[in-house]
Length: 248
Ligand code: PEP
Image (spheres, rainbow, N blue to C red):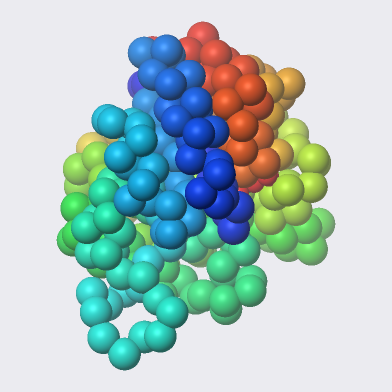
């Protein structure tokens, strides 16, 4: 499977950073065996899309409704209207800080898909849950409740992001990543059938140029969701190179 490498800028990015977004898109387009994208603040999407041509630009969330009395929220149709072609749903930072539940994430995924966006649904356990031996149960439970009943087509990716590895510099052990990604793949096949072999399962959590080659070589790791190391073309480039080396 072609690897899928997605940058997540989180709440970073001003007008002055549009040049860096253009630099990232230019670098990404050198790696022709890799699919890549950059998810940025909604305020920059329209201008970024104009700056990067065909390179996919995404949002980092969306509301489950298309419009209405939801002060401060952005709908999937608005993201699409601004030129976004994908969005991240259920990132652990939103699950924790915005108290998003699996049912919210499922509704958002349905709305985003209906608006024609590709969707990356995030799942992942906390350190307490892993230490208590509950990582598999937690992640498979999130997966079951966060995904819509119909996931046919290439619109969906799943990102496994252990919460304790996000932004911490601490990376999951390849053996643990292999176990989790294998379990996610098996759960997808059991629920949705063989066609779900085409769903990208991304690893996220302190992936960078030093560890990407090892992580991307793990079975069922079909790409990465990258925070800090996606903020500059210089940091993103070695991850794309590692992905190119392991893309099929
Ligand atoms: C993320 O934002 O999803 C992420 C994995 O962040 P970082 O790469 O900085 O850990």
